[in-house]
Amino acid sequence: MLRSCAPRLRTLGALRGLTGGARPAVGDAGPALLIPQGFSANGVTGSIRLEIPSIRDWTESWSKEIRLLFDQFMKKCEDGSWKRVPSYRYISPQDSKPTKEEGQMSRARIFSRSYDDGLGFEFVMFHNDVEKRTVCFFQGGPHLQGPSGLLHGGALATMIDVTGGVTAVMTGEFVMTANLNINFKRPIPLGSVIVINSQIDKVEGRKFFVSCDVQSVDEKTLYSNATGLFISLDPEKK
Ligand SMILES: CCCCCCCC/C=C\CCCCCCCC(=O)SCCNC(=O)CCNC(=O)[C@H](O)C(C)(C)COP(=O)(O)OP(=O)(O)OC[C@H]1O[C@@H](n2cnc3c(N)ncnc32)[C@H](O)[C@@H]1OP(=O)(O)O
Image (cartoon, rainbow, N blue to C red; front, side, top):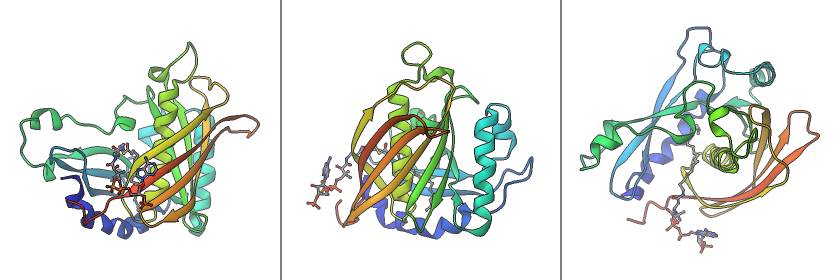
């Protein structure tokens, strides 16, 4: 079941060294790692394949603005204060138990990484261990439209969830989202670059209380703010 892999997830902290480092060279696929993870209530387990993508993965679809922010934060990584959070795209079938849904599961993709280049969720995240803070630069593609010309609220909720979840995961625990509260304050133009800042406000046992704000790059517009509760899996619970 979901919780049976929780002890293995505690090795997550060991991955932290991977997240920093220099900007990968063009054509360099970068390091890749598999994180074991339980994904469903039917006993299927899978892995997240983490990889730092090559520059080619993003140069064509990212606007100048998000590339500039990327470069600024890659510079901040050089002294170790910030680390780039690895990207993740695939669930490896290698840990999956055979089930009757196996055929469907082999087609599983991480939701936020399942769109073709530039059409959906284009983002990169950086994490600051000392401040327990993650910043996400996000450019929502044309397939994430809600009202005409505007980003769908569910797409923003996804990115708030992922950014908050990563903020908790970077402490070394694997978490599930228990609660999200989002205030949508201003509509977001589709295709614009936005900045999601997420921090851990409080930890109580297995509960990670996280807050997020979503702003324009020039910080003049607060698009949204949110709080979330992320809970690490209890290895004792079967
Ligand atoms: C280190 C480097 C690594 C690199 C990093 C990059 C890699 C990135 C990798 C990964 C990215 C992660 C990004 C994830 C983003 C997506 C996340 C999702 O979409 S998750 C799917 C949606 N969420 C669910 O499906 C949960 C469904 N719910 C559950 O499974 C359970 O309810 C669960 C696990 C959340 C809690 O269940 P229990 O049985 O373990 O815990 P109980 O005993 O119920 O609660 C514990 C405490 O929490 C409170 N609690 C539980 N739910 C609450 C709620 N909704 N509101 C308030 N309190 C709640 C309870 O009252 C209790 O509190 P008291 O300890 O008594 O003080």
